[in-house]
Length: 372
Image 1 (tube, one colour):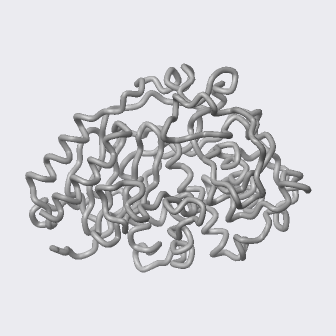
Image 2 (cartoon, helix red, strand yellow):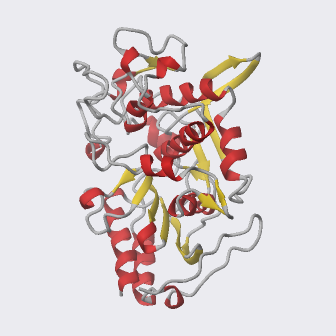
């Protein structure tokens, strides 16, 4: 397989490009992958407030939008090899909502806490470090940071007017068509049941805010986004009612998704920089921005859901994307918004607004072109 020297795009400068053939791709195969991405646009409404409001995620009244939204663009994306741009389509400079890809950025915030000594052991109960009433006995006191990061916490309560029950019985395979979503079911012991529940993710975001005692957007801007040369166009929002007081200051707790509005608004270039940071094990410009130990933990399969780590989707046994190698992993947001990273192939792929059932086909075509 052709390899090319590593490269890191400069801040605010021209991002180097390389011809597909020089990067080890079959040019016709890569062009076919790009055409596939463009031809398989998401069926979602362009006005995302309409998409949310018509009950895609949940029916009224739980679908009330409480955070900002923005109309989306068309299909766009980037393919990187060796850090250089090999292919681009659509408008990758457009800042768009990214929905649950925001969760992977929460994982990075937790990793910074781990590396700084604020979070020495993710397997310990959250209540040992965060005492705000959200982790009181008898049920929530057993919830650990790892449970929250792996979506196995079974945390019970309400966040910003949304009770955890709204996402109980959620099934991503039938998102938008699952009639059981929001129905009561008996809670299991923390750490014994995997469930994709945005209320619990928002509980993690608040716990991290209390741990850091500063806004997570400011934290990640200082520790990650500025060092990797990201633009100043990205934003990370919470909700109109997710403000808390810390040390006499009002700080907004961000959301880990966008199905009530909010979350990370970002362009494909900045997504690609974060993907490149993850591909290189947390290193950038000779600096270890996120420890290799945290990257290892983030990419370790959850016992209850082997295709999930610390808020990164894993392709364990090709269980997520059958057409892609098992060495890859991804930040994934509804719509679909994908940051696919495969260190074994020196590859980063960002795809925005592609139909959910076409994601595997796109990733498979890109890898097939690399092999071709």
